[in-house]
Figure 1: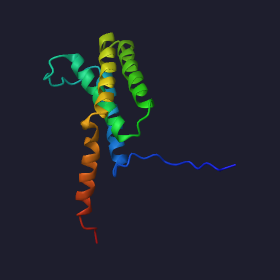
Figure 2 (figure 1 turned 135 degrees about the vertical axis):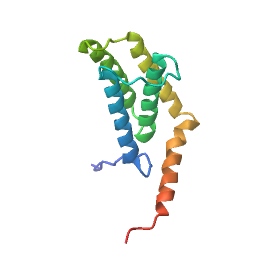
Figure 3 (figure 1 turned 180 degrees about the vertical axis):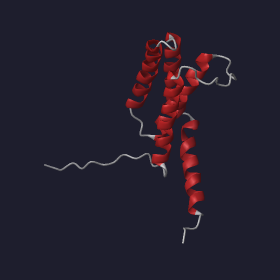
Length: 142
């Protein structure tokens, strides 16, 4: 019987762990912004609270989609995170939950999934390659 060996899936990015760590930091920022009693006022260039939700979750889905291997777990994780944070806001007594915020979070995840398959989906790979090329030019420490 042939023996199967576990192979590590990689994204092919030079700095895969860096980009993934940035993604988890983004998740922590969204969690903090969602649960803090008095979040900082975000710029109102969108002029609508729901646009902030869509943008945050689209950004997270895009980032996780390009910095990790594509997998169904990322959109599911973000959908549950968005819904769970809205429920926790309501349970905290300090903030209210809003079903339209949940809907905006879901729309953001879908938008992020769409962006991965557009020319923007290759953006991180380009930045990663440029960073690797620039860092190769730095002489090693003596």
